[in-house]
Image (cartoon, rainbow, N blue to C red; front, side):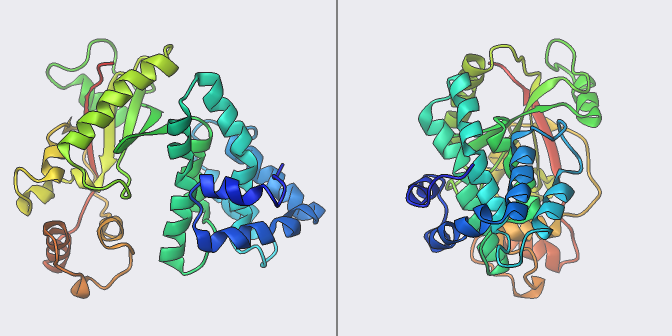
Length: 311
């Protein structure tokens, strides 16, 4: 299930695993493969990643990863899940090949493993992956999510409230916007530079070419996005020609949320979710917007948007 120790470093480099983690992952390989109990855990984790034992959109996926990781020896400390994704890599690549996904798209997509490990180290001060992060990465390794330029696109299904918003909107998409219909859920990674209109236009053009070619049997009703970057309160603080406001302008309003996601905004902008609000820097317009709003007693919320998908 795992490549030889001599082959493992090159594979980890392809997955953008941070250099400070490579020797640790390679060194722990024997601890994983030599212990039958750990090997059974690895097998269970890998089958969860590939979908061999997981239901579609399993709401308990995060908990399952947490249970499996907690059962591993303390010496592995979060690295069991890393080895599981390495073991699942041949399955992910085979799925991509079966769809004719270009090698660069496959590589850029699966490299989110290493980027997520780097985030884990920044946030927790140690290597590995958390169960939350593992549940996120299964989208990449099951062939549900693809990195196409500035944005990521997840093959998803319309939820009830989003479908209702689309169905009741004037000049909505032709056809049925019923719950469960296919859509593309856009994600905004924070490692791809500014969210410029030009970068987004290029990404959308790539997606409109990619999905009809590689998933011709799927017809998407809409593109959706669920992000604090769509919180309309940002318009109070940012210029109308700012990248974020112009990104918001692409979307029609979806459902509303009333549960604050302040930690998500702080994490995205400042790199850690639990920084003291009073000490947040004010170096950029976005930093000033996020920090000043929180310091004034406000909260940030997930914004939900959509636009008709043509492609």
